[in-house]
Amino acid sequence: MSPPARLDSVCVYCGSSDAADPAWLEAAAAFGAILAAQGVRLVYGGSSIGLMGACARAAHQAGGRVLGVMPAFLQLPEIVLECVETVIVPSMHERKIRMFEAADAFAVLPGAIGTLEEAVELLSWRRLGLHAKPIVFYNPGDFWRPLFDLFDRFIDARLAPPQFSTCWGAVDDIEALLPALRAMPPGPPLGTVMRAVV
Image 1 (cartoon, helix red, strand yellow):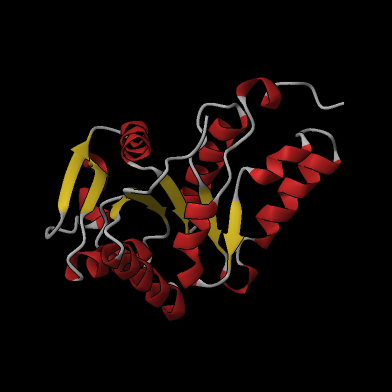
Image 2 (image 1 turned 30 degrees about the vertical axis):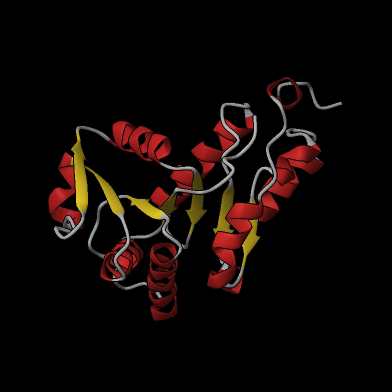
């Protein structure tokens, strides 16, 4: 199993808080514009606020393709971005499946518990050999360092194989994010990831 030869769609996981660091909001907008300029569709959670809204709005304004996927119960608190194509689904589970199926790769920007949950599930699926799609974190100011340290602890404790560290990448420059996704190597084959750590 190998990642796609070219990326047509990138799913972005990120926060939906307008109170986020303005530099992160600017970076999210910059990434949306980069995707549009490169002809890559943005797939995201459908919100008009926070990093999600900044990324989607910038992609749309730059003439890019955007697909939002929003659970019905979040339409009011997260405020759907009306100017882009948005699919309303019945549950969070359906949202994640639709986003996964629509994307060739995944970019994880700063966010809170929802972003963390999405990223960890995606890594779990890759660890199990269920996909080999690229996963790269945007890590400004070492935002994700505690999570990366936990991943290292899994490996040190022999709870995960050393090759788990090849399942994801990280960059601290938003302009390096798309090239890193394109360069991400394929994940370990199914038989390898399921073998006991010895």
